Structures are given as C-alpha cells and as structure tokens.
Length: 210
Image (cartoon, rainbow, N blue to C red; front, side, top):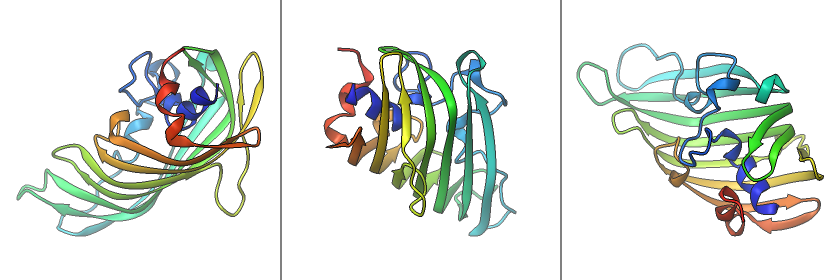
C-alpha cells in the first residue's frame, strides 16, 4: 500500500490510462483544452529578444473521474528566454523558480490496483532548471511537500478499505522529457500514518500491482 501511495502522490495521479510513461490527466476528466502536464511550458511567450524575462501566473481547473471532486493546478514564477535560432522559433527557457501548486478537493482518480481513490489536500513543488524547446528536455531540480513550508497540511489518500494521512519531503532530479516518469530521480522521505520511509525505496514498485 505504501508503494501505491508514494507513486501516486509523486505523479502517478496524472498517468493516462495504463501508459506509465504518460504524465497527463486523462482527457475525459479535463475541464479545459490544455493538458496539466504542459502547464509549466505552455505559458504566454515573452517579447522577442535574447534573454528576455517572463512571468508565469496561471491556473487550470479539472474535475475528477465521473465528475467527482476538483483539482486546481496553479503555476507562478519567473525566468528568462535565451533564443537559439535566428528566427526566435527555438529557445532555452530558464525557470528560477517555478512554483506549482496542486489543490485537491476530494479529487477522484482511478488506481489500477486499488480502484477509485479520493485525494484531499495540497502539494507544492518548487522547480528550478532549463527547458530546451528544440529537444524538449528539462534539466533541473524540484522540491515537493505537502503544502507550503509556512503552513504544511496533511494529504488525505482515501480508498474503499481505509484512509491514509500523507506527508512528504521529496527531492527530484529532472533530466529529460519532463512528461516521462523515466526523467525523474526521486529522493527524500514520505510519512504515511506517522511511519516515515525513504521515497526511493517505495516508488519503483508503486506503478505495478503485486
């Protein structure tokens, strides 16, 4: 059970159907035409010119499976663009930092091993790094926790069998396509019902049923 929870709160919630490589919300539960996984790079472009700064301040709202619950994802931050082609069509976007907030309001998704799962609470991720629009690769780091540092809150992970209180202090090294699970190396700790364990010891087996 700890493996499933760890995998889900660190991205498994956004798997598309049974494809473990995909990190997008299922199209059937989207309330907008944009994918949540594209949120960090699908933002209004800055004015043309090398090294131009940009500011991100946007959010998206989604309903859960069969219209149950809500998920709000917001992105705020700033950075700068370095253009790599003369026509300005390709660039490297530096995020310093990008803050992603995932607000779950009894959000329902399907875990292929457990069935319908409800999630309540907040996950906050602070991300720094560079995204190459030509190769679609991101190189950087992220820190994710259960709520902001000044007011952490327990995440509720609710199954038909039991409810679980979840806290985490997660570090991620990102190297590759940011929408593929294989681009992430996870570390840190997760605490489930007061029992603290290392994330790297749990997350790998969370993507498959035993």
